[in-house]
Length: 130
Image (cartoon, rainbow, N blue to C red; front, side):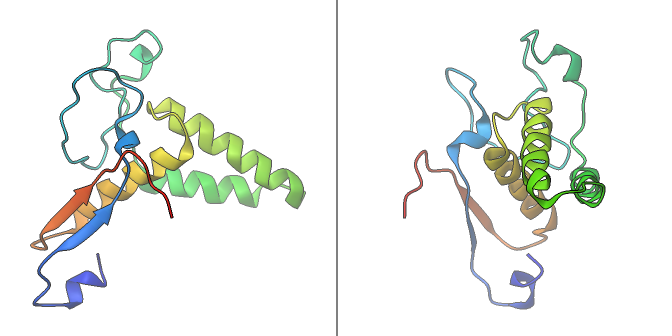
């Protein structure tokens, strides 16, 4: 967004996300932009998420946690596995099934927050292929 804001005549910023940022919820799900702090656990009555319904996603804190965890790991082979496990735990804490959709959702949040007057369209295809 910082780069896009340099262009005064920018007509549109198109972000390709994924339909799976909506998690594994069933039924009719309205498309709405994610705002900073949003989680999938908000508004879900499932007992799996009830303890975390009021949890706010702090993206900067998540980034700091990842960097701090990496700094405190010893062997490089175990760092990769530890980071995968940390990402998976954090994604599930907030209601996403894996780190891919978790980070895509965070990307949507950051873009929505930083966009200012830039028109943004986020598309969420259900399948992404090369």
